[in-house]
Length: 87
Image (cartoon, rainbow, N blue to C red; front, side, top):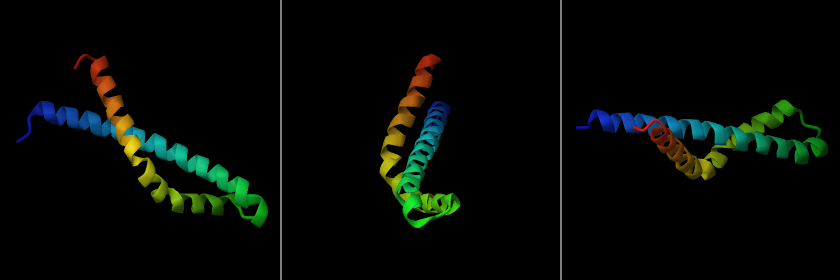
């Protein structure tokens, strides 16, 4: 059985990890999209919409690589917020 304190810390850490995953994934997919635009856009005359779809198809593999760092930064963010509010 979990206590109220354990649930509170869990939700704080889960929120921090969710924010970190969203931010890091958005940045990585955006950088991947720009890289695809640079390399494939000129050579094959592909539309940006199609390249965005291709970047989104590659997103799960990129997310798997960056998930470790997202959990690290998310938990650090949660502990920072808890410390800031003296909780």
